[in-house]
Length: 580
Image (cartoon, rainbow, N blue to C red):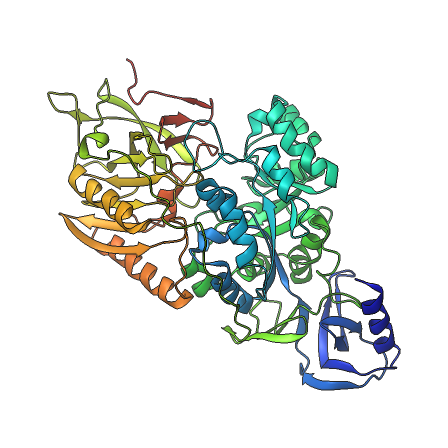
């Protein structure tokens, strides 16, 4: 705020000048005192003037006794996971009551480097949704795969002074922190110097290891798995996020760990949420509603999704309904059974009503982030899988999250040692093909729990380096699927018996599209229905989001990168074959 703005607010508060708008008869949710009160809420120039006194206003709106609560803040998300450009993402989540997000663009930066950062800053600059960014700390996420770029402390220093960049994105390189690796410490130092946040990523880290991680200045974590882990991390000074994404749903498992004493250190986030989930269930409001319906006090839940997030990230101009704060708020008839926004206001203007966007975001043409598909010499032979034993390691899918099991199985091999698919066993071939630098790298492994009966599914979304990942029971369909992605520049595709079943093109870095939300949702709905009907994919998993996390070598237990099968627990490559 500047002197001129403050002077105008004071004049409006004292009744010397008229306000722009007044919301009459509101039941205001006071997240500071954890209560509600009846009031008229006055607004000028997009900021709240106050509630008391009889002021004049140019425009009136009657809330008719409904609840007025602060706009929701997503404390950690990847816009890329919505498949939508930032403008379409704004149009999608604002009707759900989300008015601010803290986004980590490490997906697009892993593909396109600083070009991706420039695009995300530009494309989100003028959206009604307030988009703040964290500079990705781990590009690449690990040295055990090939990503499209390498971003070091030098690149961070060039960008982190931008006021819309709130700090350093999720620090996934726990071993680097634990070892006080100089390159990692240089990245952290860029945030230290500016007193900016450093987001964490620390699944199952505890004891002295967690002490060292928190002592490094890491302030948040969205990877808690148990209530005990949540309480331990809060006890050590961290903010912990209740995440409700599409594949990772942690609100209900973690809710028993939330108490009156620690709730001020708990936030809500979506992390990775696909467009169908947003359209069907909502955004941050879905996680908040889930918590309320399962026993969390409604005002406590709302505070966690508003005030707590604002306090954590230093967003002093929002997160509460109070004089001088942004007039970003939701009007709804009830909060006792969840949050269903009826009207959403941004800077005092109605932005959405009854689930429909009114304040549409301006479109930004993508620049320097398309056509990133540099695959060398791909052919069927790249998919060869010849384990040195019939007894092999298998990646086991665990529904409801991105953690995988480290399983084993006995398989069949032909006379040349090549794996033979067994129709009676739910074991498929998985392959990751490098797509950024034309290395020719490709690696294969076996995976269980996907449920597919016949065919292949491939996508260029493969966290976090986003190489091509493909799953199938036969090489010919897998080859067709990979080649289709190379041809289209990225996306999701499915093949069966040599026939293309459907393709969703993602022309922005192979991660996002400029298509409208409705078209994206319709296409993905058709692909999901086809995956279940034609391919028999397990109904308990998301066929595409589950697949894209199978290449993430920072989440236990077994994952596959373009360099080979990776044991996350030992942080080392491992052989598929188990030596007897």
